Image (cartoon, rainbow, N blue to C red; front, top):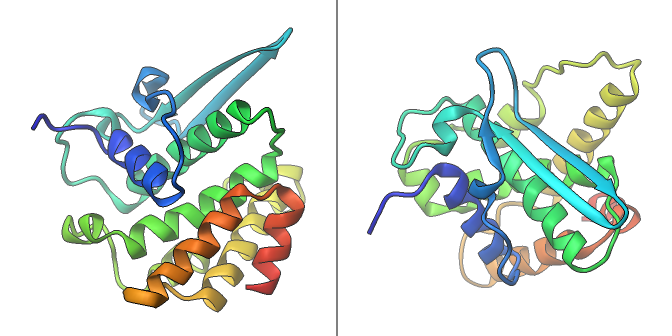
Length: 199
């Protein structure tokens, strides 16, 4: 079996986790970031036509690449999460907000890093994932900016969601976790916030 990129693996895992029908392959829309750039999703909509592009760390697009940093892995998960969420919402003729995208990506990072045994086997997971993702985090945008407020709100809501939900390791607990994750994914912004606060 041919090696696939981390981006392709992440897309498969997210589609399986959320029981999503076939979506376009993220690798067909992905381009490597520049050396000093970070993950980015570009979207343009004109007269009903939507164009998407995803910029990811170069090693995240290289089949069989190993030894990616925790930060690079998180960037790949975030970019692919954005792509999967947007592609699915567009296919359902549903809108999506910036906050929805960021909140979904924050939840997806923990879901894949904590729940997926293959990623654990690849030693991507570090101890105390919740702490690393949601507490020991730095932001590129100041707290007073619109982007800074949005990223901090998304991170805080995702941290609350997972702190109360738990990782649901196996059996019935895992099934319950997956059910809640699927409800979260299918919800819009108000639903996501309500579920994060009530988890």
